[in-house]
Amino acid sequence: MKWRQLTACLLAALLGASTIIIPASACTAVYVGADASNDGTLMIARSNDHQSVRASYIELVPGKENEPGRKMPVNNDQTVFADLPATTYKYTTTPWMDSTTDLYGSPKDAACAANEHGVAMTMSVTSFANSAALAADPLVEDGLTEFTANDLVICQSKSAAEAVGVLLALLDQYGSSECNIAIIADQTEAWYVEIYTGYQYAAVKLPSDKVAVFGNEYSLESLADYPEHMTSDSLITLAEENGFAVYDANDHLNLLDTYSGTQVITDYSHMRTWIGHRILSDNADYAKYSKQQKYPLLFSPNNQVSLQDVMEIMRNRFEGTEYDVDATGRVDMRVIGTDTSLSTHILQIYPNVPADMSCVTWASLGPPLCGIFVPVSNFCTGISEDFGRNQPADEKSIFDTEHYPYYAFKELCTLGLVDYKVYGTPVREYWHRAESNVISSFQEVIKMTAQNYETDPNESAEYVTGFCNSIQTQAFADAKMILNTVKWMMSSNSNTMKLGRNPETNELLDTERVLAPITISMDSTKYSAVPEP
Image 1 (cartoon, helix red, strand yellow):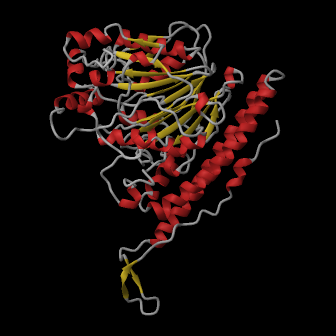
Image 2 (image 1 turned 45 degrees about the horizontal axis):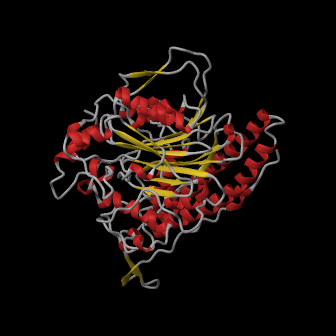
Image 3 (image 1 turned 180 degrees about the vertical axis):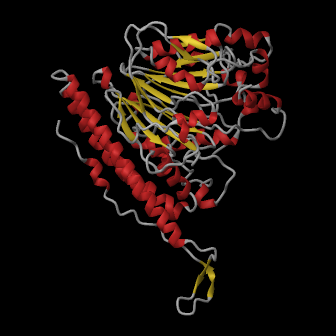
């Protein structure tokens, strides 16, 4: 039995208990509709979280034309395979390295993917169905998993709607081994998919003027709120026939109350949903956290949302609230910005450029809290040597910060949280400045790429590739320099004697030493350079 499936069963068995077991995986996702963003782009984002060291890299998977007979794994054990069409499409993704897959015996977990047609997908935000739903329709041991779904769907889909159809067809055929949430988008639309049990799911088309932020929990209530939706054939009848259907005041099935409900709501997940609502909306209902309050999937932001707003949401540690973990020292809450993020990504889709250059993946290998989001266009012809380097299986368990960006950013965050104000915050602030410059320069790069597309598409592809790769190379070089600075300063400040000393007599004082934040003196303006086409 797979660990997620085991967790779901344990959860179902413990629903009546006061304490609910939470799995190690704990992702957070964001959706920003094109009409809710400050630049007309659509954005979907997710942190890929797990309490372990699982190294990732950036991969460009080539398309294949007229090559029948190929298959991809459906389940984690890679014993069940789905047929691929003869023609598949190029896509970029952020999978685990061979060293990681060999160490843990798992598929590569694409985490997110964006193909040459501008179709983007992220899966999964693990969620939880209730015991009645799981008893009526158990998870399938060798069913579809989040580690395999992104590759399978994106390699063969030319639109978001087609991708949703592919995903749902896979669920119909193979079932699901996990309770998951996926978001799929292209230049014209976005879809949100909740997978509840072995064969039950609901997919809805998202409005372009709304946003969403959510932790590990379902949010869909009435399908009547979504003019365009797709569901499993027995989504309603299964609940009715097994006596766990819950209806709203308009006699519509309430999916949240039916398939999940208050019995599986935890502060662990619900607080992350709340903080996203609080950050993006000034609605008074979101000012204070309440475990009993339902936070809707979709809401209107108080201001147009920027790419950097989303980046900072993925780093949020409940700052400015009574739950600020760094101000209170509390360790009993799950924040979004954590050192357990294996990687985080933001898929940004431009509406008015050719589809094959429309999507840029802003990828953070390792936790973004003390790291940077680097751009990877779906138009790229290759990945930088550093970010595209795949640690081989025979190097498993080797923590190599010199050659692999993941390890450098992972260690930066680990050390930064030893004393976040002294070490972590200055690093975070440096990357924030760097990202501001990268975002500004990328806007110019994408304009010039689009302008030259008709004249010479190959040259345009090389131009945007060169820009993305140069940013990746610079970011890794900076990360290693910053890591050296942090290690140097931590060693310089090391002292098990926490009290201060009289500078003349060295006698211990009654007051504890207070360390000043370290200084990152590097120049972030180098990220603002826009190369000539």
